[in-house]
Length: 233
Length: 117
Image 1 (tube, each protein chain N blue to C red):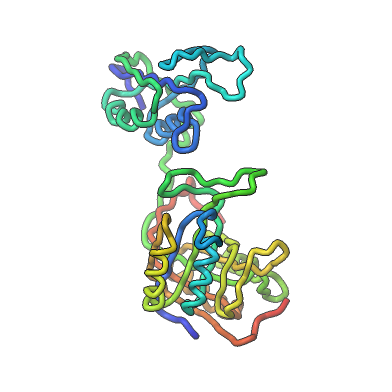
Image 2: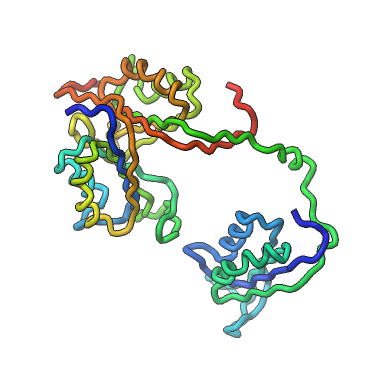
């Protein structure tokens, strides 16, 4: 967060249709500033203007391509601006980049409601296991889709989280190709879950009963998890 | 064929539009795996992503030609997978190949027996 005192005000001028890595330049610049912790930035669209090429860009003409001037502006400390400049220089492309000294008289404050969200998120890190279960979409257990039943079983065992993926092509134990045909319902299914080794190995005997044919793979992973509050399940 | 204990997982990431001799690269890789008698391979299509070219791959509505991220996952013993490396070197021009240690708990291969539903 900014403090009152000297700072830099940076102005970046680009064309609305200017591209950076397949997207609008101004959006890429705004994302860059956002994810590098800049305290605030504003994008304004001009209604008319001209640049180095001396072409007049206005809203009066019915343009298929939008070529209006866009200005991205932000205020930061001198050190922060120094840190960001090299990348911005690269991103601005044919546009213009300027800055000048400014004095921060009163920095913006966060809203009260957001301030409560400042309680540090509970971060759980450490070693864990990832279990991947490969089955077929068509596999059943007690007449119900096997992958569905496995997810229910994992939930009942308080396993932290499960994701089911459907593959588009594959083969496994029976050497038969499972292909992404429109009406085929036997595509490969991957159930991926992460939790402690004890909890996952405790579930293996249940899998033994449920999975007639399939692959269960365990691997070591490092978990970096953020939970806003204690999980209540 | 039964697989248990220590094994390796290979994950190959590339784009859906990538081709090998006129056919989709992911199909070609799966075929090659079968040829080399590798235990299994599964192809997944991502819904969004970016890679070496930093271009965002995303599907657009009403656009037929999509270039979504593809991931091929293969699990087998290390010696089986090393046979695949020279082939992949040739086939995957632009992409990422990641190898990790895994432990296989079960892998059942019953000839002709498969729950019909």
